[in-house]
Length: 174
Picture 1 (cartoon, rainbow, N blue to C red):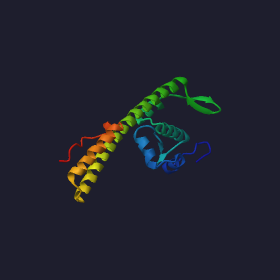
Picture 2 (cartoon, helix red, strand yellow; picture 1 turned 30 degrees about the vertical axis):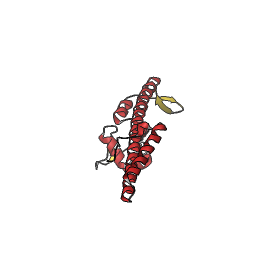
Picture 3 (cartoon, rainbow, N blue to C red; picture 1 turned 90 degrees about the vertical axis):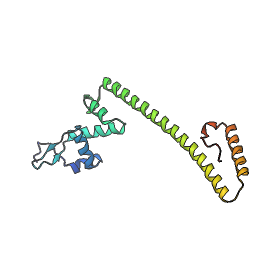
Picture 4 (cartoon, rainbow, N blue to C red; picture 1 turned 180 degrees about the horizontal axis):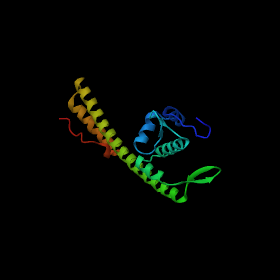
């Protein structure tokens, strides 16, 4: 290549520079986020501009943006911000802030849902563990009435400790 032409990288070299797999680069191309040039043999060739765009996509993905959100953000102009660096305009930053806040809210809702699910699973596990203990002790020959009274007393203790909500539907063992 002549020195007047910028160097182009193969998919392997570009992926190595970006610390991703070639498949990742192909995937973003398939999604229309980047369009590398092609060699005569139809091999993908990536310019520095392509690598900058990929790096931007990867940063946005790391921030939790969806691919659709990235497509929208890539439409925004990147402006010089001094010292040879580029960045977003104030308006774009406000829009990015709103998008990130929305993503944080969505993640908070997911976390709350997972916590509820975990609490329910822990309650069911505790109940099943109690049932398993009861069955094992019955198999070992302990009397049903004594075990039943013990389970009732344990439930009353838990209820008194304020964990009534963690009691499942495990009533009688008859």
